[in-house]
Length: 268
Image (cartoon, rainbow, N blue to C red; front, side, top):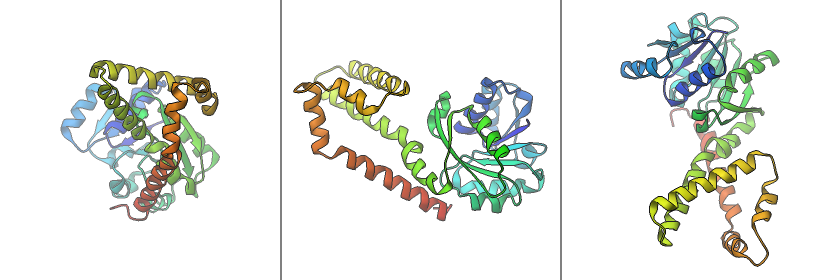
């Protein structure tokens, strides 16, 4: 299929690179990027992919168009290219908080899919949730999954759950990175050299996430580390006393609410 990516930032680049890795031919992909210096960078980073300056020329002839610009620019970008869209061109947005109604207003009559990936898309390990608009058929959703699997895992949810997805997995990598920062700092305060604390934390998080990826219950994995009366049990008791679970729930709820707010007012 012919595919256009509107926006050559990190996510647009990741999608184009992921599609190439997934076997898409370079001459089937076009990336629109307004910045001339960034277009020059992209020409080196995703060799063979067509790079253009404007959305309208990018979408001409495309069967799938992915809006990968900032949320406040999605409607404007799609509207500027609407006359060049085919009648059955699938429009996918990967911008946080941009609702299906906004996409359908900017691309009237076209099938649209709202998607929420996260930044591990940059290494092909995204967690992405999608929801289809009123004109999106099973075939369109399947096509969206084919495209977005180039970034990682794809699941389907109703649109009213996408703000929760944004709070959970969309923003989720930042929570993990904050945990890593805090653990490294704590290691240094405990007397470890900074480079040693850094290496140990990175490997610990990598190992733990790899165990999780095998599909075993997180509670069971935690129990395997937590011997009765041992060091880990004492440490977990501190997190429990501070109501760690409630803090995480509040964090995700705040992110969900902000996503919903952005959907109500894309300029916010």
